[in-house]
Amino acid sequence: MGSGDNGPYGIGDTVGGGSPHSFGDNETKLIDEFGIDDEGLFGHEGHSAGVRQIDSDDPLGTADQFAEVAAQGGTIVHELPNGGWVAQLEDGSYVTFRPDSSSGSPAVTLNLVDSTQVQSQKIHFEEE
Image (cartoon, rainbow, N blue to C red; front, side, top):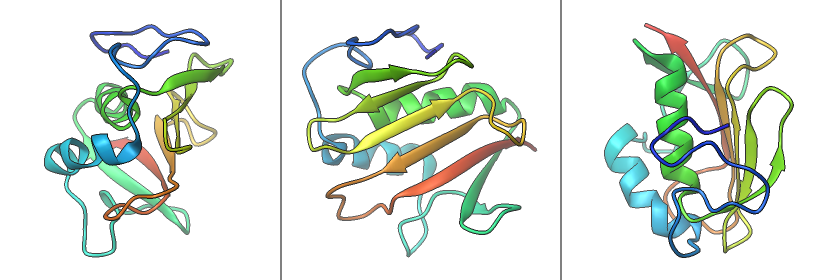
């Protein structure tokens, strides 16, 4: 579950506390912190088709921070067995945080409803 300043989270908890947000409320901060390309994608092309990758000295910490910013104000609707979570935002977008995925690296999946700048995507966080 989220290991940031406001985690861990359980079903019904609000990510980061505070009032409900849509992804649009979080998008600018996420872009400022992590950057996107001209197609609205984070990081660079990953090892698998359609998967993005962000390299970091601390992949788990970076993935956790990314998920916390993306899901700020969302409600945890599902807890994953590996300690991850799924948050639903006010606009119907979902952010899924997995501290370890089938490939072994942390991952965040963005399923977005109404973003003007960012595409839905899966991002793995790998050691630099």
